[in-house]
Image (tube, rainbow, N blue to C red):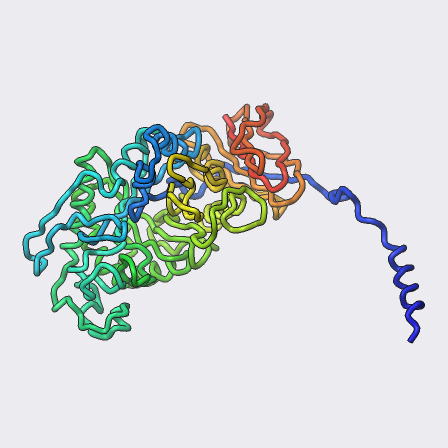
Length: 493
């Protein structure tokens, strides 16, 4: 067989191919036009946040050797408007008075044999370090939005008789059924409800928790009765519910909560994903309970936000928990494209806010003694390390403050993402995320906004929300560069 003629053809073909340009933007349009129209308004900002649930708050307050000075520094880094910019703290309402797994302890010391019995509550003023976390966060953000959320009712109030292994609150439809599949539990034991209705008892329990926080000088801004009610983790506190069963509880919780704390919001229902939350809301609406909550709360684990939520009274929605949870500690902005990197989180937050009109985004843990990536700040005894995920949060929430209103912002380039927020004091935040591997020249046309000057803050592999320039806004317009694989927030005054 002759090989040489074949090789000769290859050689000729190779000679006809021009070498790639060292500058791959050669001949590529690298300009972007962004229009901000302040006359078209969307959702109001609640803010970004994190949690100290499951006893992890104690890591931040010295359990493993973090000094008092560093405890303050870590909390300031998270919650100061000038650093991390977080405004939401999600606290865990414990459900087991004899917990040994590090979870938050229940305030219910003794459970009576019936819902009509005497309830014995106990308050230690600490709440597994969540009180200290709340008070310290308030020091750096006096307008902190505290979300008190229960993973489960105490076991004595449920058909499975325990706070873990899913199960149902006694009194909601299906809770008296002995069919394990419908009980949404691994247990094959008969229902423990015995035809008793514990809904009001559970509501009273939740409100007592809020009263204890009030006693500590901490205002609870929002109360939730569920965490991931579409998922039974079996091994830790959980309580199942579909939308119909949520209606059965909310018809008791909502009026009781409003009577006791008129300004406190009621949440529903922290589904595991955006689609799962939509399913819960669909059934809740169908059952006639669409007006029995103030904020639709959801997590970003099992599905992404792709469209506005199916609320019936214009309620806002808030993403209240997410983290990778599977990888090693990742502090990077944009190195491998792994989902825990800060650049990816800048896009997650953007997609939720723009696709689903989301009013805020909450990371799972604030800080943790760990080698994993569940927290925004990794603690190692008396040292701490900040993930670039926090700088993604700061690129939005330092500048678009609670109460800000999102207005229409459109980019004519698909890989350049933009949102725009008008704060209550008239300042404007325009976060721009450039997913390209080259810089774009971005021209902004601001309609209906009375601003004359701007400051640019850059976040990339070399900058952590770093102030890089000041500039004039002339006639409602300006042009600036946005670096490759970067987030640049334009703060306008």
